[in-house]
Amino acid sequence: MLYFESYGREMVSLIEPRDLYDSGWYSNGKKETEARIGIEVGVSDGVKKIVEAYILYRCEYWWYVDSFTGITYDYFWAYPVWFDSIRLGSSISCSTCDSEHP
Image (cartoon, rainbow, N blue to C red; front, side, top):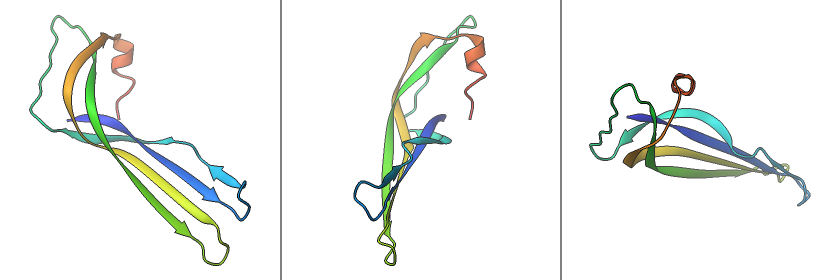
């Protein structure tokens, strides 16, 4: 199991076509993600490396139209479903190792 970033985005369309609020993609935090296959990678002698993996993300789209105002609300969520094809990437320092935990 590894932790991968999940994302959200909100868009609101007002009455005028040019009046659009877009939050842009933002982080929803890291989510537990299961391995699709049994995978192990390892290093020795205290070497620290970035772990690279193929991650399948699911993107959900929800929308709502306020029948009184005509304002349209669009919501997007992208979250990791599973990962595989894991491999070791570049070396990293000890300060990086402890800074990115969920």
